Length: 202
Image (cartoon, rainbow, N blue to C red; front, top):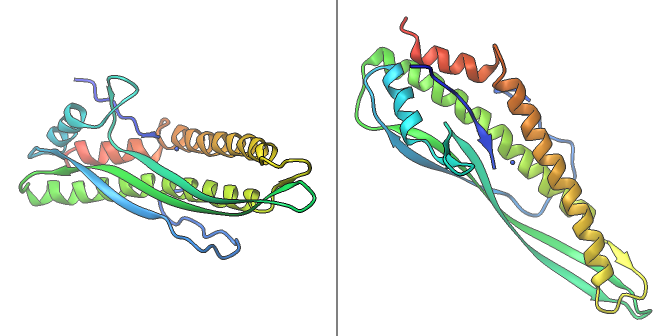
């Protein structure tokens, strides 16, 4: 059976995510892990179970793991005495969900060791996607606060400016994720090494 691996972001290296030198933000992302159940007594059986039970994306395709997020905003648009409008504040609420596999029951000690290496690497990969999402939201916050337009009593001009910027930043985040996955999942990439380390007996 030909084994296929793929990771997707809904959205660097597996180890060591660099901390940005950015201004202090008054919010923090909520990061949570959602698991789906798999079973097996060998690395190959575990991987086959992932293929049968992994989360469904893009209609009917299953994946090993993925990262999704929910983002809402509290924005304060203020009318100005001269008839303009300014976006005085924009506070996000960001929830990032990492979906990862979790084996049922126990397994032989050598398989358990390989599984831990696989899981840790997989979680680190998804964490990078989560960091990209956080950086996108920080960029949105920075770009939002202070947006203004003259003769904009209903603040529609400011909203239009914001929407254009949101699309640019969303496209930027998606492209970063695609570029990252292309390297990680390419021939000899970190994800391929993780899969081979799990399914190959030692």
